[in-house]
Image (cartoon, helix red, strand yellow):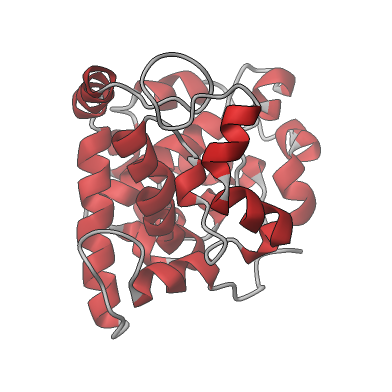
Length: 236
């Protein structure tokens, strides 16, 4: 069994985010996620401080670490300068590196996030791009968005945008030079490695769940399972 506390300590965010927690609970009192989810940042700090490998591994496999919205309210209010949200970020990182994220419903959703927002950033330079917000995938957007999606080029021109064209302006096409630089940033920061882990472990999980899995895109059973599945067992 790994020494998980030592592993977490290799990340500078963990060392800076947990220095002298006295379990006062101020972080939980101010936390928006704790208001709605079965989530208590104070307890997470407490579990990590025990250095108990079994308890930390359970955290890495849990739904809990995916509830944090990373708003950093805890950082602003902690009287000891701790940042539970940063601890959560590190727990998420190692959950992805070790493949534990596939053990929870919210963790498995990392695959959907990677195949949408993650791939958008690499391929287009945008977190969310008009071309990826299809009416089929986002029916909640309604008929107005469907019309906009189908007439995006004409509407963008009328509004002075530069939709999928070279040069400056909103919605412009990002140059290959800049996309290559984004890719290098992902390589240097190990974002690429985490993306590869998400793909590898998700593919194995899809096999366990007997769901179809394609190596690219969103048109596969496992993607839609992670995208829409909701046990409705996360809120208080």
